[in-house]
Length: 207
Image 1: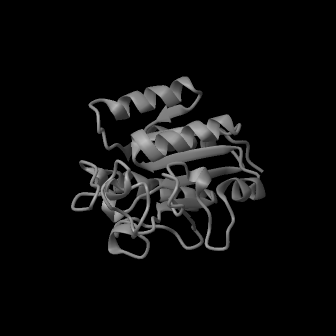
Image 2: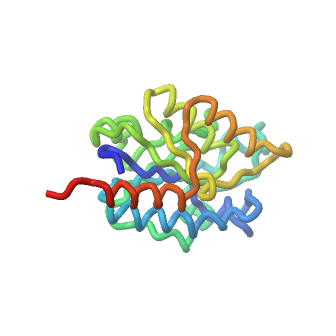
Image 3: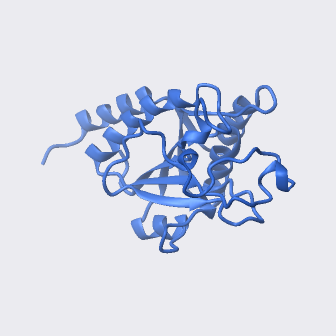
């Protein structure tokens, strides 16, 4: 594992999972792989950052106010809560996005903590240069976050079995992954990442 890396989880919330207001087909299937990532991150000492959609009840993001999405992830509602199976560790930093009623807020780089710190500020404070990214949805918030991270100069690894997409148009998620890979992101499964990290540990010099 590289030093100065961060695990960034995007919008693993009830409304994006089966039964939610904007459910992603089998969106909850990513929870298992994400929890394995979280165990690895805690063991490895990686900081964990988790974004959440945190929309006001009236926003141009929703169809009733001119947007393209049904009402979802409204601040303080059960749908905006993290999935109950997500094992966020103590010390994970939560950032909220989509709070501006004039913006969609797809990118995690628009997210901020309760005390106003934005993602870039947190990453600079950590000295992070690599982001491991997982979450929902592949073709919107994950895609936008990854592309912005690449533009900002970060190395990015997307965990392909720990993301899932809306696919409003058929194949949108696959196209999003191809796009971010062309842009410089590395695509890996969680198992491949963990195998690679174990290999690094085995060959690391002792003492």
